[in-house]
Amino acid sequence: MPNVIKWFVLVFIALVFVAVNAVAFDSRLGIASTISIAVAANLFALSLVVIWLGSYYQGLRDAGFLVFGHATFMLSVGLGILALGIHGLLVGECGFLISDRAIPGIISKVAAWATEHGVCPWLSMLFVLFGLFMLWPSLQLFYGITLRSRRTR
Image (cartoon, rainbow, N blue to C red; front, side, top):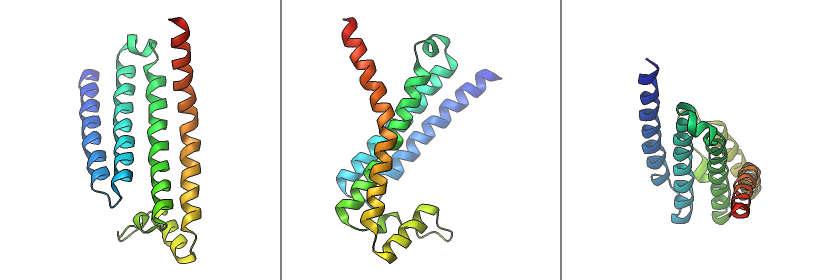
């Protein structure tokens, strides 16, 4: 039974990959922002695959795939949030964050409030800062790994 679960999780990751790409390319953002979101979405799917490999194969777990997967996950989240913040700063409004669903989410409510009060640039700057906050540990990890691998050559 665990073998079936392993492959079910991989199929689920493939479906997540398709879904996040569909959302990234179906957005109302500009081309640069769409590409940034698509890169973040694909890094997210890649991080899930790396975590999956590290979870089910001992040799890859020992090689640090779980750490790499987590770092790539945090990198994708940071890039996505950073891209939304930069897009908000470039267009100068928060309308792209406001959803037209019957029950809007928290980001939609905050974006509607920011639009009403004229503080969209501040909200976008908050997204940029939070994205950088999420990016920093992953960038440090990848830079450290690169630096150590160059020293061993």
